Every structure is written in C-alpha cells, then in structure tokens.
Amino acid sequence: MSPIPIHLGQFAPALPEIFVLAMVSLILVIDAAVDDSKRYLAYVLSLATLAGAAFLTVHSFSTMPVLALNGLFIDDPLADVLKLFLYLTVAVVLVYSRDYLRVRGLYKGEFFVLALFALLGMMVMVSASHFLTLYLGLELLSLSLYAMVALQRDSSVATEAAMKYFVLGALASGMLLYGMSMVYGVTGSLALGDIAQNLEDGTDLRIPLVFGIVFIVAGLAFKLGAVPFHMWVPDVYHGAPTAMTLFIGSAPKIAAFAFVIRILGQGLESQVAEWRDMLIILAVLSMAVGNFAAIAQSNLKRMLAYSTISHMGFMLLGILAGTQNGYGSAMFYVLVYALMSLGGFGMILLLSRAGFEADQLDDFKGLNQRSPWLAFLMLLLMFSMAGVPPTVGFYAKLSVLQAVVELGYVWLAVAAVLFSLVGAFYYLRIVKLMYFDAPHDTAPIIASPDARLLMSANGLAVLALGILPQPLMAVCVHAIGASF
Image 1: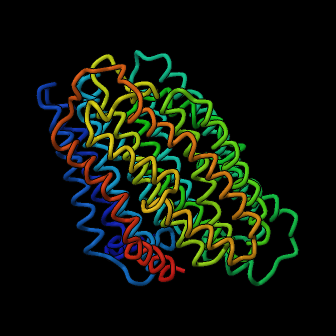
Image 2: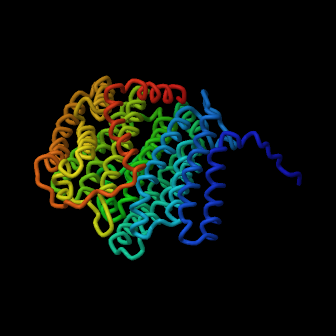
C-alpha cells in the first residue's frame, strides 16, 4: 500500500492556527517549568502569540476564497478580517484581566492556555467550510470556556455556573449534531459548498430538511444566547470571575456570528425562507426578554448579560435579511458589540480590587467625583449600548434596521426601536448613578497605566467610530461580498 503524498502547500492557509497551537504547547511546557515568580512569562508569550498570529494572517491575507485541507478549511476575506478582530479582542482581555487575576491568585498559566485554546477554536470556526470542522472548532471553544468559568476552584458560585454551562452546552451541541446529521441525510454531504449546490438543485425530502434546519437553528440560538435558549447567560456571566465573563462576553460572539453565517448564509442559503421566520421569532423574543429583564437587575454583570441577549436579537435582524447588505450590517454590529462589551466589563475590572468586585450598580455611584475621566468613558460606553448618537452603537442599530426595512419588514424595525427605548432606561440609569449620586466607596481606584490607557482608547474608539463609521462598515461589506 503506497503512502498518501502530503503537499505542504495545502497547510499554508492554516498557518495562523498551526502557529497558535505550537505556541500554546510551548507556553504549557514553560509554565510547568517555572516558579510562581515568573508567571508573567505566560502573559508575555500569550501577547506574542497574538502578535505573531496577526502577522501571519496579514501576510497571507486572501482576496479570494481559498479551500485547503481537502475542503475542510477555507481562507477568505471574511475569515481573515474576523481573525484579526479576534486577536485584538483577546489581547485587550488579557491586558484588562492581568491585575484582577494577580490579586485573586488566578494569574497562572492555565488561564492563558485556556484563552489561547479558546481562540484556536474560534479561528477554526471562522475558517470552517465543513460541518466536521465547524463542530471541531465549536467544541474546542466550548470546553475551554467551561474550564475557564470553573478556574476559581474555591468559589461555589463559579463551579455551579460552570456545571450549568456544561450541561446546557452539551444539550445544545447534541441538537446541533442532530440537525447536521439530518441535513447530511438529505444532501449526502458535509461540505458547505456541496450542501448549498445540492439544495439549489432541489430535493424531495423537504420534511427531514426542515426538521434539520430547526435543530441547527436551536443549537445556534443557544451559542448566541438568544431567547428561549438564554437561560445560561445571566448565571454564567454572574457566577464566573469577571475576567472570564469579559472573555465570554466578547470574542466568542464574533466566532458565533461566523458560525451562523457559514451554516445559514453559505450552506443553507437557498433555504432562507425556512430559517428566516425562526430568526424573526428569536430576534423579537431576545430583544423583548433581554431589555425588560435587565431593568430588574441590581448586579451590573447580570444586567449586561441580559443586555447581551437583546444585542444578539439585534444582530439576528441583519442575518435574517438574507442579503449581503444584511450580513455586512450584522458583522458590523457584532464587532461593535464586542468593542462595547470589552469596555463595559473592563470598567468593572478596573474598579475592582482585593476583596471587592465592583459588580453592583451601587458601586458606580459617584464615579464622576472619584474619577471624571473613567466616568466619561463609561458614559460613552453606555450611550453606545443604548444607541445614542454620535456613538457607534447608534450607527450599528441603524444599519441592521435598514437591512430589515429594505426587506419589507417595517413592523420588525418599529418593534426593535421600541425595545431599544426600553433598553435606554437601564443604560442611562448607570449614567445617573455616576453623575448625580453620592459615592458609596471613596477608596482610590488602583489600575495599571496600560489598562487605563487601553480603556481610554476603548472608550474613545466608540465615539470615533460613531463619527466615522464608514471605514469599518466598508471593511465588513467588502469581506462579506468577497467571500460569498
């Protein structure tokens, strides 16, 4: 039996993934060999890994879709742009989290290794062109997140959150697999391109196909945290250490968007009439439940968790349009949401200190008297989440609303605007607490200069992108157009 020839050129599109995997292995070995006084090596090497992966991604930037690894992997502008944003997001998470982790005894190699393994899973999801690759990336991401939530071993709340996340995540993965198997039974293929072609040619097995799409959409809705598959989001966001919540609430949302686009926008594009109605229901329920439930929260992490649910509902508005303009708007929205989420949870990390989490709404009372600059940055972030001009959140909401209006769903846009007005209440409540209430805590805010500088850039980026949103929007539209 002759050996199968291996052509090294087919691995070139996956060089960033190979580099990240090699660096994670190196960090594991180095961290096991050094003592506690040199834990900073894992942090430095993790940032170096992100910089190296970004260099490789830019160096091999593809202007046209390129299939590799026998059709399992695709390198296209959509994948490259999303990967660059993933590197940036994870880097910001690491900088924001450093002091928080050190004070709580979590500044260990395990956190950085799990974060990079999760990043690797997200990169695989973003570049997947096959059901097997999609599922492989999803499980690598999910297992890393379960472990990250439970990393604070002496916290019963974190352990409970991790168990709930794991059990519900396994259930959602099962639903996703079942849906994929039914689509495979109808089309005879697991490759997204072949599935799309076979469905365009027509099939007599309509009922199994629709059932498969229902299970796939249900699995995707869980990963996004859309209603009615949202029950894990507030408990996990609240129970996990804030550094882990920051990670879960930012980068995986970008990967989840790519996951949805790959399956629905590419593999099941011809069945848009079947999944659009389901996404409309998910979007409306998510915006309604997310915004109304957030009003009743006194914990900022839980409030932002319900806020995430409503934001995912807005993102689904762009996807359900089923057009390249809609997909571009949804991509713009999810990138903007990741930026806002980094700022919101990052502010909690900056205000936290040993024995104090700063995750209650009351902890933000009188912040303007303690630090006018941080209060101003938080005001920008809250205005952006509420969709108040001239912040970028306004333009993000406007772009997805335009996509559904062009489709003829004016009532859906009106409903989204009304729910957005409800959301404005609990965002502006934080602004009121910061500027008009007396502070409960007068302790000095201790944060490293690099974290303060990055937070300033984060908050000002929300304002700058709101004034000049066209460059980022153009990148999103081009990435979608060149990849479809």
